[in-house]
Image (cartoon, rainbow, N blue to C red; front, top):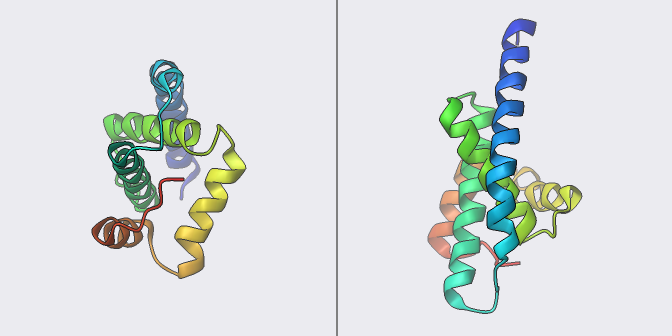
Length: 120
């Protein structure tokens, strides 16, 4: 990747992360109870969206609006499922995607269809 393009991508992501962080602070403060089926489905959908975002980011197919939405998804998932622990979300990602030798989109589609994206 040429340096200019890399810097543009980094700048766009930093702006999106800053904006999304402000929006997510309110959403994360509400918390989520993982005990109900609807909450479990919400977590599964959040994980699926995150995996889809990872796929789009790797394929360099994100526009500015999508970057903001994906950043919000990341922060919500990290706060609501992984107790704001970056290492835990990355470990989950590695186990879910990379160790299987698949891309994030394929895993998200297959696991959502089979209902196998866990709620924790």
